[in-house]
Structure formats: C-alpha cells, structure tokens
Length: 204
Ligand SMILES: [Zn+2]
Image (cartoon, rainbow, N blue to C red; front, side):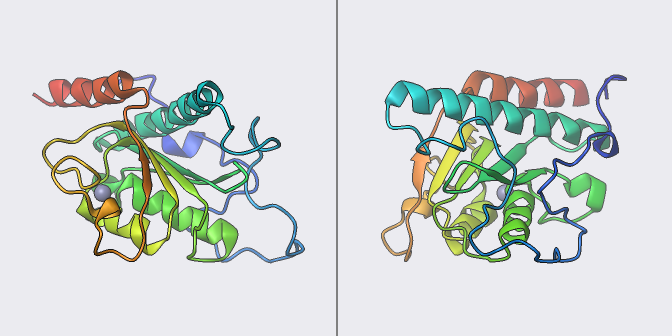
C-alpha cells in the first residue's frame, strides 16, 4: 500500500449522503426536495442530450469512481469503485470494494453504492438512476442492478473472466429478465484497468 494512500476514514462523507452505518435519516425534507449531493450537471437535462456532453459527464463521474477505488487500497482490497447518480444527476451513493476489510463476500463496490443510494432515497427502487463502476459487474452485482431497477450502467474496464453485463454473461440485457439496463461501456477503460493491473502486479 502506498504511504500516501488516503485512509477511508480521512475522507469526509459528502453532505446529503447517508452512510452505510447510519440509521435511516430523519426525514425532515419535503417529498419534492431533491435528495443527494448536487453535482455540476445536476441542473440541466441529465444526462445531457448531445453525445459529446454525455461523454464529458460519464468521464467526470468515472473520475469520482476511480477516486473511490483507490480507497480500497488502504485495506488491500481489489480497487473497484462505484457510485449511483439519480435521474437528476445528483450523487446518491458511493461504494468501493470492501470484501477484505469487512470479511463480507457481498461487499462489492456496486452493492455498497446501491445500498447507500437506496438509503439516501428511502426506497429500494432506483428507477431512472445510473450506476457508474470502474470494472464490469459480476453476476451478483448485475443481479442487484436488475433488482434495484437501475436504468443505466456506465462501466470502465471489462472483466473477461467474471463479467456479467456483456462479457461472460449478459444478465442485464437478458430477454428473460423483467427489466433491462442500458450499458455504456469503455468509459476511461484504460485508467480503470491500469488501477487493477498495478494492484495485482504489487501483489506478486
Ligand atoms: Zn460484484
């Protein structure tokens, strides 16, 4: 682990986000008040109409997910980071792989981000939401995307060994499922893959 790697506890949680350990927040907000953390693009149409503008937003969001991934290094977890933004582009939840840290086989970045997003919204239904993740989701996480009714998946690097959203399996676009997820692949794929290659190289 690099000495200058930020410790998870050093990173302040953005205001407006529920923590994984938080009790359900006191709901003082009105039903119409937007939930989550405002991001620069939360005011216009989300995602933007033009392809170039969309690409910019996906790149910026993947940058946040990559930043989240680096926090996993503090606990020698495989560096995978994820986040969920709402239909209005607000940040609802973040997560990083914490399997080693917690000893929990289900503590994948996507699952933790989905849980935090659901806590922020106060609902398991994440309709219209986008999940951004640095590595293609596994079978469990692809299943969780379907169960949460996530609208869109933005992914960085493919996982040719265990990916379940287009490489080994494609659960999120399986005709037999009662929900389909739009997949936007290859966003900052080289950087996302490099973080993993560096991690595994250091393990040897
Ligand atoms: Zn997973």
